[in-house]
Amino acid sequence: MAGMRCSKQTRGVATIEFPWLWGRFCSVLAWFASALLLIGCRPTPEANVAGYLLSTWLGTQPPAVSTASPGALAGRVVDAQGEPIAGATVLVAQADGAPHQALTDADGRYRIVEIPPGQYVPAAVAPGYAERALAGLLDIPKLITIVSDETTTAPPLTLAPYLPAPLPDDLAVAVNLRQTGVYTAAASFPAAAVADVTAYAFDYAGATVDTVRVYLPQGHAPTRQWPLLFMVYPSPVDDWEAVSVAFAAEQFAVVAISPIAARGTDAEAHAQDARVALALARAGALGGAVGDNRPVAMGGSFSSAILSRLLRAAGDDLAGWVTVGGLADAFTATHEFYAGRITVPAPYTWLVPALGPPNLYPLPFLMYSPVYSAGDLPPTLIIHTAADEILPINQAFALEAAVREAGVPVETYYYTDVSHYLGIGENLTDAGRTMFYQITEFAKRYGGFP
Image (cartoon, rainbow, N blue to C red; front, side, top):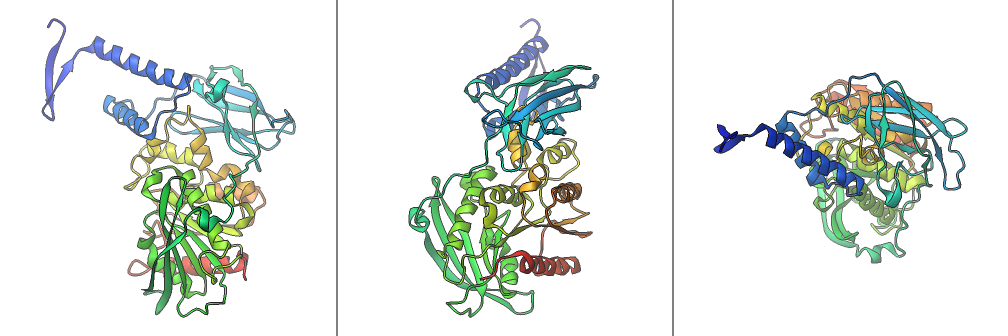
């Protein structure tokens, strides 16, 4: 055919050179993506990853950012009655994740400067209010165009109070809570650490959650209640048994949970599973040794995103939290990802692309960024290593600054070590020992005791 030729073989597949047709295809693809946005069809995580892989193959990753003179965005944040909300964080994010933000004044007004020209969907959050992105008719995301050397005024952004969905009455019956195993587990640290373990499962929101474990000091009296540590692990709960046993040996009741495959990368769904487990524990449904006392919660890496959502949903049910190598700002972490400066381990290789373009879909990134809602956090212990290649230590520095600015009690343990996590057993280092005892002291200081 005239104007078409086979130019090379790639992995056994003929690649066709047809420049004008390929350009037309890319234009149609871009138009189709824009049309989906305009009609309110949010791409699925699978579609987002497919788009990322296609753009990587086309050589258009990392996402292009305009180098033209920046513009600005102004607007107002109000409640459902039209009253101004002061102290709200409003932001837009570049396609590569870099955020641009401002706080609202007493009249609810904001102005964000130095924004590269392009199209964005603004989003906001405020203490006591749920995160929200600017939307139009039928809740379709509303694009705002930023122009060089001009200030664009956005429509008002209306926030609603954050009200987590109520849990069912008689929760244990409603979720079909059942015991699935009883056994004893040991750990090499602290010396001769042993715990009595009970495994549970329950059904919630269309899935079976079978990753709940309760660890108690060995030989515990059946009528005695212990201070509670609530663990949200980033990978299978049984892989972290040595950690759970170690804390149980320090005279804690440890309730642990990890994500289930059915929820995929939906940190909000994982958080609601954790919220059910926490409510069951505090209601005494996980045994009489786990009572109605306010626990300290702990998570790290990916589970810190789950934990940040649980903190909002659980409210005063949690007395404090510990984040180990955790995520504080999903926007800046995304920026580091697209710049190739972080290493994302399996099975989270495609987690960032799965969330979609942050300039068009900022809400999931904002929801997993506790740095922007620090005023709602309980007392905080931040642990991070300078050697972290998964989530850089600047995530911890940003969270510490935000928590201090909000007036929330905060403690830190920054160290240099090879471990992204708390490794107990053969991986335990001197830094790990210090970390472990700092966590136990923090939990004793802030946790509720029966």
